[in-house]
Length: 278
Image (tube, rainbow, N blue to C red; front, side, top):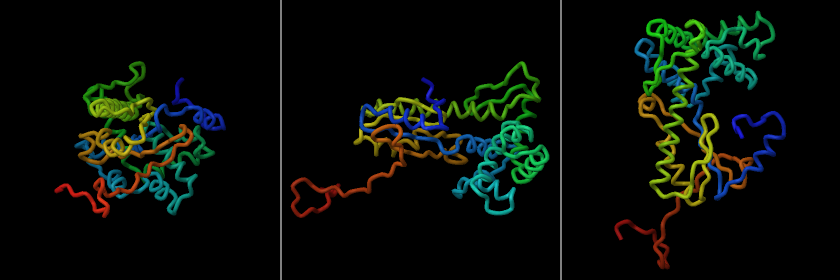
């Protein structure tokens, strides 16, 4: 079964997820935070001809880039719907879309609105146009772009160069390689540590593990490093969100670690903390 195509718009998704239960104690979900946006932020900063750090600064400040985009477009605090429209437009423009794209997606209702909205978007986010222009120039000069791992991407050879959504290929290709490394690193870590917990599934940019309860804290502590990338980490962190589902996939909730407890020496009737010097 392809779990990436679960129905999300009716009650079947919840009913199906209730039927998927861990064999051990709990499912652990490790999801990259806004991976595509962070890869775009890295590309803008790391490219010598661009060196644009605006997106990275927003991430470092803990801001919501899509809310910021909507705020700049509307000139006020946006509603959730307006924030979602800005997010949809962000990725449409990032992946070589036009005003016709957001019109088809229902972001706006008329061609005039679509053209005006895209104009305002590019005024708020000139970085997107810069990145697309840079990738287009590289394609025209050498006919390919490279991922962080040096893999060449040429796009669909049946399309003329100017029509190929190369920023899309570059971000998606880089994201796929980050996921491959995260899977390999996590799998090797679990095997080396003789954990009972194990990987069971990936969905988009999320790892799902079936975990023994006692092993969860150690795994959660190590996941940020296991899912990181050295090249991107020089510019910004690839953050992750961690969730837990103890009875089924449907019961997924944010993971909150237990507060640290002081160790007490066995048989110590006074309850004095155990010192490493003892």
